[in-house]
Length: 125
Image 1: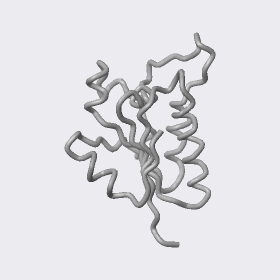
Image 2: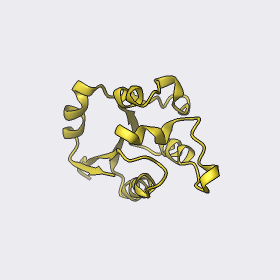
Image 3: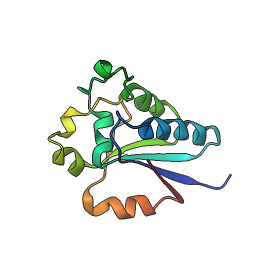
């Protein structure tokens, strides 16, 4: 099968909208077709991967474990825009720890365009 890479951009907050959860379900579907998937968390989407986020008071499940679980699948990369973290008062240290051997890919502001356009398809959530 031809290399068909997909960049899934998560730019909406994890709670109060279904978009990050729908992005997760889309990634699972893409994996059934053995697609290489890069997930780029940027803008409010970076909050999805903040370890201290606690949606229990609003009755929502955490998405962190689900996204980190994707790293067990072949061809999945989790990328984070550090500038979005900083704009929201977070740092790389606030991110949930990925499994050993599966580090985050950090995409700086000047790299975003090349990173996204380096994929055959881009899906934004």
